[in-house]
Image 1 (spheres, helix red, strand yellow):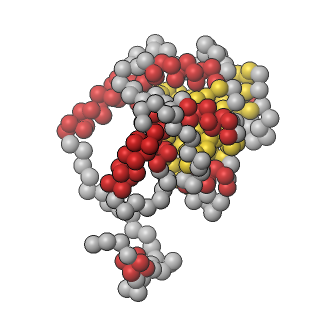
Image 2: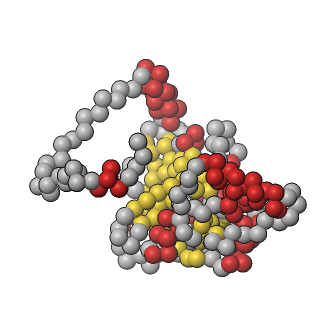
Image 3: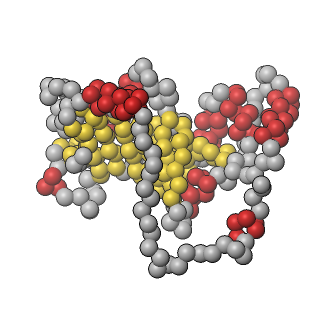
Length: 266
């Protein structure tokens, strides 16, 4: 049955009184023996001897969070089992305070920040234009590592967006050019037909111009969190700006340039 207005907001729909108690959900989900064995194996792989190297702020190869991230990122790219090191979770929030998250691919990163590109009418773009702040998370599960990055968002120039567009594979350009992201489609075939028309229009050699609605953003890191499961404990290191008035310097374990480094409880 299709979704109609009456299905969602019909007169038979009754709102639960605000005073009603919320009952906890008792899940009937049970892990199979296979799933339990996988979890046990992952745990034993992540917990090794006390001599295993762990994250120590005073013995890091670099105390620059960007350089440390680059090192981890390059190791993830060459790690067996990490299929797409560029994948990250992008968390945003609307002006009404409604959060949303999705997996996206980072388009590049440098001393200025992390580059993201999307249709300007997508939810993530609208969120970042209304509330210019975002949270990124890279999770490389086979390496037992995670990096979280929080910071303000800037809209990049048209020229910068074009440069990122040119770096995309042609197949990805076709999809982005054909897409009115987040708009409803009558069918899957409708989008396939639209893409085929563009393939015929541009052929194999004509450069595909950037979709006029395709824009790029830059997330400027203000906080970095590096997480690694090593030895018998998860290690969490927080890099935060020295001018952050909310920090407590008593617990600072190292400092470099504009960054203070703290160890967080697992």
